[in-house]
Image 1 (spheres, each protein chain N blue to C red):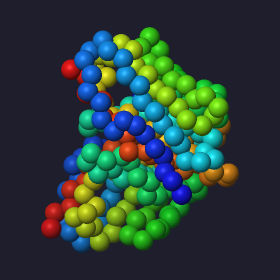
Image 2: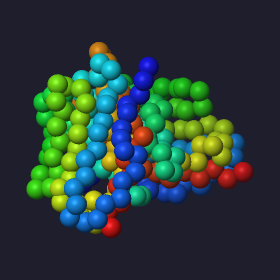
Image 3: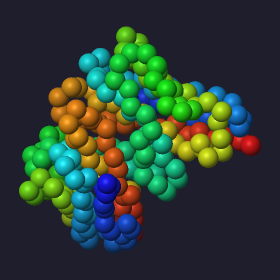
Length: 112
Length: 114
């Protein structure tokens, strides 16, 4: 079982719609969770971090964490063509060591 | 605040040659990561440093890859000899502000082995 799993996509959404991305992780004692956005040919850019159960909103992005079910999700509201990218979920599996582990990424295509 | 600096941006070498990548993390960041990202995949952790000590190198192919972080600041990743399957983007990231674990990436080095 992979430590961090994501659907590779592509997830195709019309402009203005909500894009919903999911990520599951295997280590129950994971402490820190991150979403990165990666445009083609560029390096990953941190867009959200979440550490406790519930929702965290930042502009058009909402991260949701459910530690009991071991999943973290990202919602992108009012999707724009500029949101077309690969979204990487990353987890620090244990409190000690800060080992940052990535999933394979979900490719999102926002169609005008 | 300056970001993570990496060089070179691009490198093309023949198989069996050697290559080295350099990374300068964000000032004050104690943790430094090297990742390998093959096209279409997520970043794979090669090695993690905490100051100048190795925290995790379980996925580093030690027969050909080596890394060091002298004085707990800059880091160098070396491949010797390179194989065709080493063609990838090599990403350096750093983290470690007090109380925070967010990691920030450099622009990466795109390596092509021919």
